[in-house]
Length: 321
Image 1 (cartoon, rainbow, N blue to C red):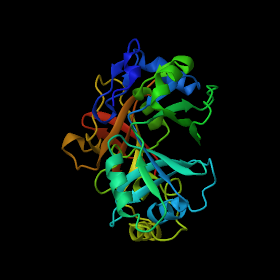
Image 2: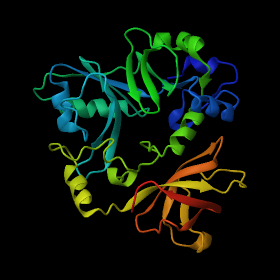
Image 3: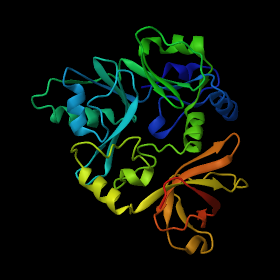
């Protein structure tokens, strides 16, 4: 869906999976600084919104998700994954329960597959699954924001701010009253700085939770069975995920950022060296300059100097090898 905030002055549309909202509104670094200072709002209205209601919603979701949600307190935000039978990540849900309904926002375009899977698993459970993307838009307020939350709006309180499930009909007026609007590129820059992985960016068809540091935040190790749990338990006990997420400081003299998928190699071996991994997200940060997240083989030394294509890349550990 095309956001009405794309009509604001200076709005430049985002591309790819984030199509439908603004990449920025004319000043990327100003928007990053505003977000870091706790002002403005981020239009995430392109994300899917899925709800699960009914008396069995929490006990039922507990059987399907990697997170412990059977006793999730009202209003407490959490995140969870749905894995394949082999333990590979299929869905990431940012969720909260309001006492009657579990609200989740998910990556753009993934809501149809998620709803189809949940519907296939209902059996005799007293639950109702719904795609509410047409009705509700996700808006992010940064930590420290004093913007009010309208009555009746469901909120996810998270360390870096608040996610609002705002009626779509209220999106434009809410932004007018509580702006400035901030583009998705600024939000992504702070996400990379905070080492937060994103489904479809830091994941591919074979990513498992340990590789991205989602153990603990999105995976509970002391709960009952769910699809893919065998892989999680095996890797947890052996302690050897095949890859690990890294944070990269990129050479600031380069004009262009390396695109997602750019191969990572040892700097000492040059462009013809062995492929050790790849860039997942690269951004320009208002203070740190060009930075990135990447996935590399677990056994790459933590102090190894890397290159992304021809761009020098110094790594910081996110997931311990």
